[in-house]
Length: 402
Image 1 (cartoon, rainbow, N blue to C red):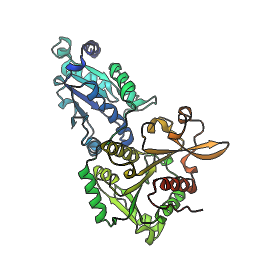
Image 2 (cartoon, rainbow, N blue to C red; image 1 turned 30 degrees about the vertical axis):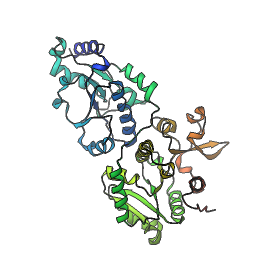
Image 3 (tube, rainbow, N blue to C red; image 1 turned 30 degrees about the horizontal axis):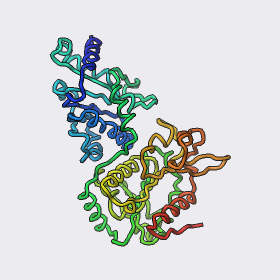
Image 4 (cartoon, helix red, strand yellow; image 1 turned 90 degrees about the horizontal axis):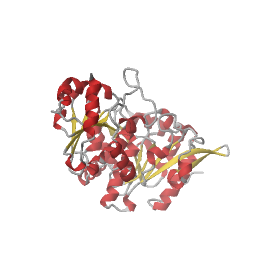
C-alpha cells in the first residue's frame, strides 16, 4: 500500500513553484561521521537558499552523537536557518512545503509517512512533496552498506532541477566555514595563554586521519616535524581532541627540548579547534587528506571573501597518495579549494614524484593509474616543497636540511 503513497508524492512533486516554497526540511543522515564528507554535503545544501529564494531551510539529523560536529560546521552559516535533532515521529512533516532526503533508508521513510499520513496524502489534504539528493551525495558511485547489511534504497524522485542547478551554477563555488572575528580573537588569547609569543610563528600539524593509509610513514613525519621546529621562532600546534596523552608521546619522540615548543589542544570542542585554525599567527597548516584540512580550506575561503590580505592566509598543504576507497582521486575532494596546495604522490618512469593538483592539466588531475601510497613519501619531498613555499611567502628564512 505504501506504493500508492509514493505515487501520490510523485504526482505532488510536479506541482511546486520555486518562489512559493517557504519552508523546507532536509533529512540528513550519515551512518559514519566524516568531517570532510559533511563539509561537502553541507556546501551542497547551501544551494537550496539560492534555488528557493523565499524559503527557510531546516536541517534535521537523528544521531545525537553527531550533534557537536554538525553544530560546529554549521554555526553562523547563513544558508541554513535551523539545525534540529529529532526522530522522524517528532517531525511535523505536514508543516513543510518540501521534504528533501539526504539519507540511506528512504524506504523506511516512505513507510513512516504512509503510516502517519497515507490517507491524508491520498485524499489531497496533505500535499506531501518529497525529493531525494541521496544518491548524488551519499553513494558517489560506490556501494555503501547500511546497518542491516543491505544496500541503501533511493526510491524518492531525484531532485533533477535542483541537482542540475547546483552542478551548472554553484558546484565550483568555494566551500566556506563561517568563523567570526570574535572567535579568532578567542584563539589568539588562548594561544597566548599557552605560551605563544607575539613574534612567534605557529605551524598546525594534523597527525591523524580516518584511515591509516592516508598517512605518511611515521619516521618521515618525525623528521619533518624536526625540520619545522628548526625554523626560527616556530612553534607547533597539535590537536589531541580525545585527550589520549600526545604530550608524552611527542616527548619520547622528540626529546624534552623540542617537545617544549609544541602546544596541545587537549579535549577542546571542535568549534574551538576550528577557531584555533583561524588564529592570526598561524603560518602553516599541514596534514593528510582529512576533515580538518577541509575545515582549514573553508575557514580561509570565508576569511578571504571577508577581505583578509593574502599574506595573512597561511600555507595550507594536504598530501595524498593512492585512494583505496570511495572516490579514488584527489581532484574530487580538492578541486574547488584554491587556497590549498594538494600534493599527489605519483609514479613517473618508475619513480615516486610529488605533483601539485592545481598545477596539473584536467586530464592529469583525474588519473588514478599512477597513484602511489602515502607511505612512500620521503622527508626531503616535504622539506623541499615547504621551503619553497616559505621562501615565496617570505614568512621566515627557510632552512633546508640536506
